[in-house]
Amino acid sequence: MTTAAPNTLNLYLNEIGQHELLSKADEVDLADRIRKAREASQKMELGDYRDIKQLKQLERLVKKGALAKERFILSNLRLVVSIAKKYPVPGSLELEDLIQEGNIGLEHAVEKFDGRKGFKFSTYGTFWIRQAINRLIDQHSNLIRIPADTHSALRRQLREADATSPELSVEMHRINALTKVASLDVPMVDDGDKDLHAVLASQEQTPDELVTEWHHQQLVVQALAKMRPQVRQMIRHRFGLDDGVEKTFIEIGDLAGVSAESARRAVAKALTELANDQALNPAS
Image 1 (spheres, rainbow, N blue to C red):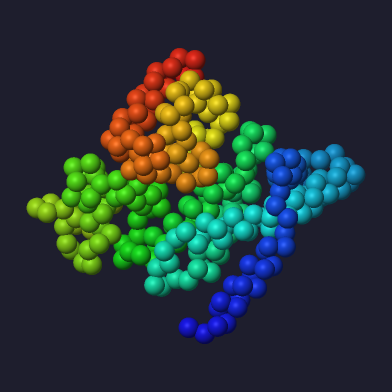
Image 2: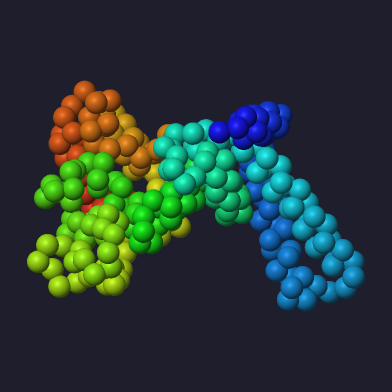
């Protein structure tokens, strides 16, 4: 490998390091400008303005939004690099590829981020950056292309159970076999009648549903306040509420000083109690 790539990467790292990090107030302000620019752009496309003066105002909002988006992205490029470095790079890819794909996820997160909800962008952005990088790795690591959300579910289950363990669901057994075999005519399971031409529908929640569920600030605060401190911390680890990284029950058990099974039962019980809590689920 030549020194050109490392030098290029070093130049990139030096360049993005010159952009100042944003305060929470900055994030709220920039997100508000981006939202107003999006609304102004929609009005312009629909011709929803009274006169030239109002059109000029809409154009100024769009321009301010573009500048806000650029600053937001530039100030968070280091977040992408820090996340990309945690991934093992497949042989067909390089670190720069993961960073580039992560930047696409970052841009998407910036466009969708709503600073009015009260949570920090780093947690929200991490989710979308990881989604983009995982999707790229999945596309290059298997002969058969599997939906990104299904790959995510498979990775989680494989971290917590061997491929032969009963804890791996029937669907995940099939998908795991699908990602390893080389022939389209090989059955996905032993003695099965379905080959790799079969299509499996994912039952996983979409990224939007997951983010909405776990980052609705007021609801999360209320729910966590009802838990014992140890269980509260387990929940935070499980769903990555502090750093955006979802931990396995083995990892949670190590941090809490209990077994993985005890951690799993504690989290499951807490989630069941939340689901049955009428104060948190008035419509249920």
